[in-house]
Length: 290
Image 1 (cartoon, rainbow, N blue to C red):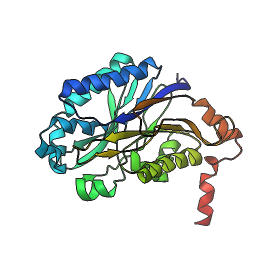
Image 2 (cartoon, helix red, strand yellow):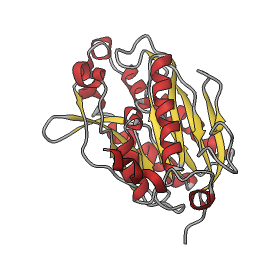
Image 3 (tube, one colour):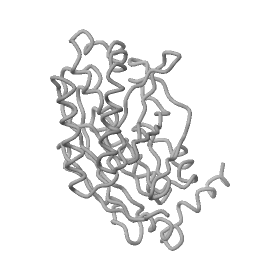
């Protein structure tokens, strides 16, 4: 039986410089424990928040985009184990931002892992790649659009740039997802707003909840995530019973923090039937003019 109410936490996560993996373990544990103490059952971390692990490596690796991807594979098992332990220990659903994962053919995919309270995990690969990922970092796009079963029903993940392409979210919503999670990493205010606008557009047109989680702060030692800007937020339909601007909660710009929200997933079905407009139902109507 699914429950319909959920308290979630979305992170404005500061990229830091680490001395060793134990320091990372303590940092991530503190973040998770704070969110759990705040009552959250679903925690969302940002895209590429794992890149602070590159600070564990020598300068020659830090300054080489290809070499840092290769070196990260060595800490991936520890990263996975840490996130799995945190999810299982606290009985939470943990979306661990994203991590570049090497494939058998040598390609790298930007992968967002979802860790379940029972210790299992699944993932969504980023589908649409930015110019930086394609042209400089040589990270390629995945090809599977997924939804994930939870005690609140199906949920979905759009990784950063994916949120700017409406057909991805539409397929997930049509598969039953009323909640879309968007881990993001942007280095300009314009980039942050592109993702934010995409998130709000997806919430509007699908009459669903969309949650954004950005990296924040400066990491001058990093070739990949040296500048990070944004604000975490929870976006809603713009209709009866929701905020007039479609923003249920939003953080202080560029400040490390958790942003919390209580959402009622049962309200999604109601608003699609009784709202002022029927964006979700009327999606197919636009095809008449094509």
